[in-house]
Length: 243
Image 1 (cartoon, helix red, strand yellow):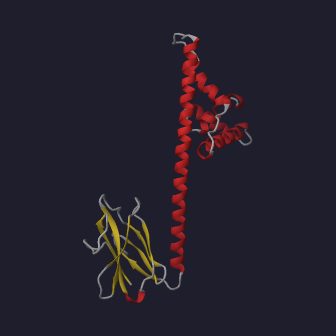
Image 2: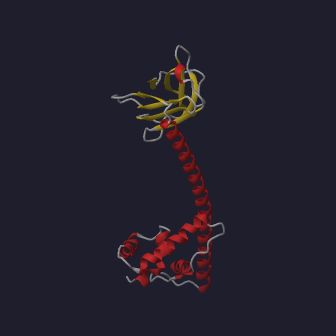
Image 3: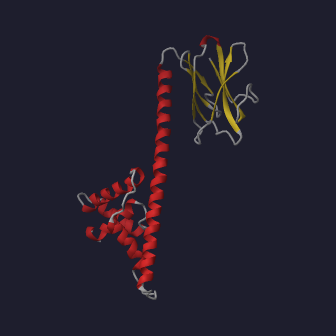
Protein backbone atom coordinates (compact mmCIF):
# COMPACT_ATOMS: atom_id res chain seq x y z
CA UNK A 1 0.00 0.00 0.00
CA UNK A 2 1.08 3.59 -0.59
CA UNK A 3 1.56 6.16 2.15
CA UNK A 4 -1.61 7.93 1.06
CA UNK A 5 -3.56 4.69 1.44
CA UNK A 6 -2.11 4.15 4.92
CA UNK A 7 -3.03 7.62 6.23
CA UNK A 8 -6.28 6.41 7.78
CA UNK A 9 -4.40 3.84 9.84
CA UNK A 10 -1.99 6.15 11.69
CA UNK A 11 -4.21 6.82 14.72
CA UNK A 12 -5.35 3.20 14.97
CA UNK A 13 -1.69 2.16 14.96
CA UNK A 14 -0.80 4.72 17.66
CA UNK A 15 -3.70 3.52 19.83
CA UNK A 16 -2.59 -0.12 19.43
CA UNK A 17 -5.80 -1.36 17.83
CA UNK A 18 -4.58 -2.01 14.29
CA UNK A 19 -4.78 -5.66 13.23
CA UNK A 20 -1.56 -7.64 12.75
CA UNK A 21 -1.53 -7.63 8.94
CA UNK A 22 -2.14 -3.90 8.60
CA UNK A 23 0.32 -3.15 11.43
CA UNK A 24 3.06 -5.16 9.70
CA UNK A 25 2.49 -3.33 6.42
CA UNK A 26 2.61 0.08 8.09
CA UNK A 27 5.73 -0.82 10.06
CA UNK A 28 7.52 -1.64 6.79
CA UNK A 29 7.07 2.02 5.85
CA UNK A 30 8.25 3.16 9.28
CA UNK A 31 11.58 1.41 8.72
CA UNK A 32 12.21 3.32 5.49
CA UNK A 33 14.28 6.47 5.95
CA UNK A 34 12.39 9.58 4.97
CA UNK A 35 9.07 7.79 4.44
CA UNK A 36 6.10 10.21 4.89
CA UNK A 37 4.39 7.65 7.14
CA UNK A 38 6.98 8.31 9.84
CA UNK A 39 5.84 11.90 10.35
CA UNK A 40 2.20 10.84 10.15
CA UNK A 41 2.61 8.25 12.89
CA UNK A 42 4.51 10.76 15.03
CA UNK A 43 1.54 13.16 14.88
CA UNK A 44 -0.81 10.27 15.65
CA UNK A 45 1.23 9.33 18.71
CA UNK A 46 1.10 12.93 19.91
CA UNK A 47 -2.67 12.71 19.69
CA UNK A 48 -2.68 9.40 21.62
CA UNK A 49 -0.48 10.95 24.31
CA UNK A 50 -2.80 13.93 24.61
CA UNK A 51 -5.57 11.56 25.72
CA UNK A 52 -3.64 10.97 28.92
CA UNK A 53 -2.38 14.44 29.67
CA UNK A 54 -4.85 16.96 28.23
CA UNK A 55 -6.99 18.74 30.78
CA UNK A 56 -9.81 19.14 28.27
CA UNK A 57 -11.30 16.27 26.30
CA UNK A 58 -9.23 15.72 23.16
CA UNK A 59 -11.14 15.75 19.89
CA UNK A 60 -10.18 12.78 17.70
CA UNK A 61 -9.21 13.50 14.06
CA UNK A 62 -12.13 13.63 11.64
CA UNK A 63 -10.79 10.86 9.46
CA UNK A 64 -10.57 8.51 12.44
CA UNK A 65 -14.22 9.14 13.27
CA UNK A 66 -15.01 8.69 9.59
CA UNK A 67 -13.34 5.32 9.60
CA UNK A 68 -15.35 4.24 12.64
CA UNK A 69 -18.51 5.26 10.81
CA UNK A 70 -17.31 3.44 7.71
CA UNK A 71 -16.64 0.23 9.61
CA UNK A 72 -20.24 0.25 10.82
CA UNK A 73 -22.14 1.51 7.82
CA UNK A 74 -20.16 -0.10 4.98
CA UNK A 75 -22.34 -2.87 3.47
CA UNK A 76 -20.90 -6.37 3.18
CA UNK A 77 -21.88 -8.74 0.38
CA UNK A 78 -23.44 -11.19 2.80
CA UNK A 79 -25.54 -8.52 4.54
CA UNK A 80 -29.08 -7.52 3.78
CA UNK A 81 -28.91 -3.74 3.32
CA UNK A 82 -30.65 -2.03 6.24
CA UNK A 83 -32.68 1.17 5.92
CA UNK A 84 -30.50 4.29 5.93
CA UNK A 85 -31.83 5.55 9.26
CA UNK A 86 -30.80 2.30 11.00
CA UNK A 87 -27.25 2.52 9.65
CA UNK A 88 -27.05 6.16 10.75
CA UNK A 89 -28.31 5.36 14.24
CA UNK A 90 -25.85 2.50 14.63
CA UNK A 91 -22.99 4.71 13.42
CA UNK A 92 -23.89 7.49 15.85
CA UNK A 93 -24.14 5.01 18.72
CA UNK A 94 -20.73 3.62 17.87
CA UNK A 95 -19.22 7.11 17.75
CA UNK A 96 -20.76 8.02 21.10
CA UNK A 97 -19.44 4.82 22.67
CA UNK A 98 -16.00 5.39 21.16
CA UNK A 99 -15.82 8.95 22.48
CA UNK A 100 -17.00 7.82 25.92
CA UNK A 101 -14.30 5.13 25.97
CA UNK A 102 -11.67 7.68 24.96
CA UNK A 103 -12.80 9.97 27.80
CA UNK A 104 -12.60 7.13 30.32
CA UNK A 105 -9.19 6.20 28.94
CA UNK A 106 -8.05 9.82 29.33
CA UNK A 107 -9.20 9.99 32.95
CA UNK A 108 -7.76 6.59 33.85
CA UNK A 109 -4.41 7.06 32.16
CA UNK A 110 -4.04 10.54 33.64
CA UNK A 111 -4.63 9.17 37.14
CA UNK A 112 -2.27 6.28 36.47
CA UNK A 113 0.38 8.63 35.12
CA UNK A 114 0.12 10.84 38.21
CA UNK A 115 0.32 7.82 40.50
CA UNK A 116 3.32 6.41 38.62
CA UNK A 117 5.06 9.79 38.72
CA UNK A 118 4.41 10.04 42.46
CA UNK A 119 5.88 6.56 43.01
CA UNK A 120 8.91 7.39 40.88
CA UNK A 121 9.51 10.54 42.88
CA UNK A 122 9.33 8.55 46.12
CA UNK A 123 11.74 5.93 44.75
CA UNK A 124 14.15 8.61 43.56
CA UNK A 125 14.07 10.32 46.96
CA UNK A 126 14.74 7.00 48.68
CA UNK A 127 17.68 6.26 46.38
CA UNK A 128 19.17 9.69 47.00
CA UNK A 129 18.88 9.15 50.76
CA UNK A 130 20.41 5.68 50.46
CA UNK A 131 23.39 6.97 48.43
CA UNK A 132 23.93 9.80 50.89
CA UNK A 133 23.96 7.39 53.82
CA UNK A 134 26.33 4.92 52.14
CA UNK A 135 28.76 7.60 50.99
CA UNK A 136 29.00 9.23 54.40
CA UNK A 137 32.43 8.35 55.90
CA UNK A 138 30.73 7.97 59.27
CA UNK A 139 28.68 5.00 58.05
CA UNK A 140 29.67 1.53 59.22
CA UNK A 141 28.79 -1.50 57.12
CA UNK A 142 28.37 -5.21 57.71
CA UNK A 143 28.00 -8.07 55.20
CA UNK A 144 25.59 -10.97 55.74
CA UNK A 145 24.73 -14.28 54.07
CA UNK A 146 27.78 -14.56 51.83
CA UNK A 147 28.40 -17.94 50.11
CA UNK A 148 24.97 -19.28 51.12
CA UNK A 149 21.64 -19.65 49.30
CA UNK A 150 20.01 -17.66 52.11
CA UNK A 151 19.31 -13.91 51.98
CA UNK A 152 22.52 -11.98 51.49
CA UNK A 153 23.56 -8.37 51.22
CA UNK A 154 24.84 -5.45 53.26
CA UNK A 155 23.76 -3.27 56.14
CA UNK A 156 24.94 0.33 56.55
CA UNK A 157 24.59 2.03 59.93
CA UNK A 158 25.00 5.79 60.03
CA UNK A 159 25.00 7.56 63.40
CA UNK A 160 22.90 10.48 62.08
CA UNK A 161 21.00 9.13 59.07
CA UNK A 162 19.92 5.68 60.25
CA UNK A 163 20.13 2.06 59.07
CA UNK A 164 20.08 0.96 55.41
CA UNK A 165 19.42 -2.67 54.45
CA UNK A 166 20.21 -3.97 50.94
CA UNK A 167 19.28 -7.61 50.41
CA UNK A 168 18.81 -10.25 47.71
CA UNK A 169 17.51 -13.83 47.78
CA UNK A 170 14.76 -12.63 50.11
CA UNK A 171 11.43 -14.18 49.16
CA UNK A 172 8.48 -11.76 49.43
CA UNK A 173 6.67 -12.19 52.73
CA UNK A 174 3.47 -14.27 52.38
CA UNK A 175 -0.02 -12.90 52.99
CA UNK A 176 -0.50 -11.81 56.58
CA UNK A 177 3.25 -11.52 57.19
CA UNK A 178 5.88 -8.79 56.91
CA UNK A 179 9.61 -8.41 57.44
CA UNK A 180 10.70 -6.49 60.52
CA UNK A 181 14.11 -4.91 61.11
CA UNK A 182 15.71 -5.05 64.58
CA UNK A 183 18.53 -3.03 66.08
CA UNK A 184 20.12 -5.16 68.77
CA UNK A 185 22.37 -3.33 71.25
CA UNK A 186 25.40 -5.11 72.67
CA UNK A 187 24.10 -7.11 75.62
CA UNK A 188 20.59 -5.68 75.17
CA UNK A 189 17.17 -6.67 73.82
CA UNK A 190 16.14 -6.22 70.17
CA UNK A 191 14.54 -2.88 69.36
CA UNK A 192 11.94 -2.77 66.52
CA UNK A 193 13.17 -0.60 63.65
CA UNK A 194 10.44 -0.77 61.00
CA UNK A 195 8.57 -3.02 58.60
CA UNK A 196 9.28 -3.70 54.93
CA UNK A 197 8.48 -6.07 52.07
CA UNK A 198 10.74 -7.71 49.50
CA UNK A 199 10.21 -7.23 45.77
CA UNK A 200 9.01 -10.04 43.49
CA UNK A 201 12.60 -10.55 42.27
CA UNK A 202 13.81 -11.24 45.82
CA UNK A 203 15.52 -7.89 46.37
CA UNK A 204 14.83 -5.43 49.18
CA UNK A 205 15.99 -1.95 50.11
CA UNK A 206 14.84 -0.53 53.42
CA UNK A 207 15.94 2.68 55.12
CA UNK A 208 15.16 3.25 58.78
CA UNK A 209 15.76 6.93 59.35
CA UNK A 210 16.96 8.46 62.58
CA UNK A 211 20.01 8.64 64.81
CA UNK A 212 21.68 5.38 65.84
CA UNK A 213 24.24 4.78 68.55
CA UNK A 214 26.66 2.85 66.37
CA UNK A 215 29.16 2.19 69.15
CA UNK A 216 26.58 0.38 71.29
CA UNK A 217 24.91 -1.52 68.39
CA UNK A 218 26.01 -5.13 68.08
CA UNK A 219 23.68 -6.67 65.47
CA UNK A 220 21.12 -5.72 62.83
CA UNK A 221 18.62 -8.52 62.27
CA UNK A 222 15.47 -9.26 60.26
CA UNK A 223 12.63 -11.61 61.16
CA UNK A 224 9.32 -12.57 59.59
CA UNK A 225 6.46 -11.18 61.68
CA UNK A 226 2.67 -10.69 61.58
CA UNK A 227 1.81 -7.88 59.15
CA UNK A 228 1.13 -5.44 62.01
CA UNK A 229 4.65 -5.97 63.35
CA UNK A 230 5.83 -7.10 66.78
CA UNK A 231 7.41 -5.46 69.80
CA UNK A 232 9.78 -8.44 70.15
CA UNK A 233 10.87 -11.08 67.59
CA UNK A 234 8.51 -14.04 67.26
CA UNK A 235 10.60 -16.09 64.82
CA UNK A 236 14.20 -16.99 64.11
CA UNK A 237 16.18 -14.26 62.30
CA UNK A 238 16.49 -14.64 58.53
CA UNK A 239 19.19 -11.96 58.39
CA UNK A 240 21.90 -11.38 60.98
CA UNK A 241 24.49 -8.66 60.30
CA UNK A 242 27.12 -8.36 63.01
CA UNK A 243 28.72 -4.94 63.27
